[in-house]
Amino acid sequence: MLTAENKFESGKNNVVQGSLQPFNSIDALNDHYIALTRSGHAELVEKKIVPDIGPFFVTGDGTGKEPVILVGEAPGKDEVSEGRPFVGAAGKILDDLLVRSGIRRDGLYITNIVKYRLAKAGKREGTYANRPVKRHEIELCSEWLKAELLYIKPKLVLTLGNTALQGILRCVETGSPVSGSIGDIHGRKIEVSVKGESLKFLLIPLYHPASLIYNRQLKVQYELDLEEVKKCAQSIL
Ligand code: URA
Image 1 (cartoon, rainbow, N blue to C red):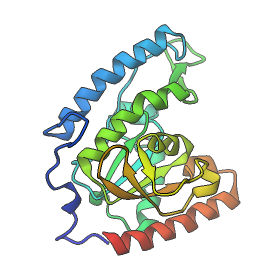
Image 2 (cartoon, protein in one colour):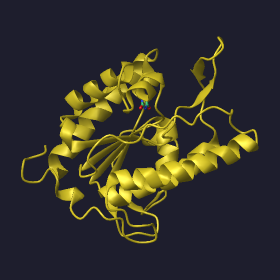
Image 3 (cartoon, rainbow, N blue to C red):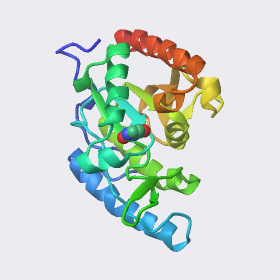
Image 4 (cartoon, rainbow, N blue to C red):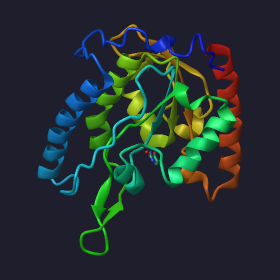
């Protein structure tokens, strides 16, 4: 559990070191990557890989000093209208995760691997619907996640679902080879270091709870995995 003394330890000296550009604030980091991602997205539009919509950005929520990072897939409609990740229906996912893991809300930086809505044209004119992520978009957005990791220097990172897992696996290396499949490694504590950097942290991949609604067995597994997260958080935070 977080204590008043140690809750901000991992965020000391929040300046990105190493090969990436240093940033003096999480807002400066986000502004830099919004510009980069906007131009990368425009290239994907030009190549007709993604529809010419948006991008509607929602950046991470937190001070950048939190010891735990939660990485989801991408913001949805509610997140875009409120300008924060995991609100609306997804807010319930977040509340449940906090209760089950015992992690305090102020100890958690909440972000997504893709920081814009994965939107396509909706059925009615002027409306949008969600669409699946493209591999190119995970590639486009993973450098932004890497910069967040280096800036925040977390002790623990939780990923929700396969897209977030594929994104973080592009940013880190593990001591021994691990399967990249969420079905194989959900709930496992994996020691990782950021590629080309000295920063190390524990990664626990979790199923995305939104994808488990109709699968009782996987939902039970997700809840068991959160008990592991709780034990881990109690021992390292
Ligand atoms: N809202 C988010 O911000 N991310 C998700 O992965 C799901 C809902």
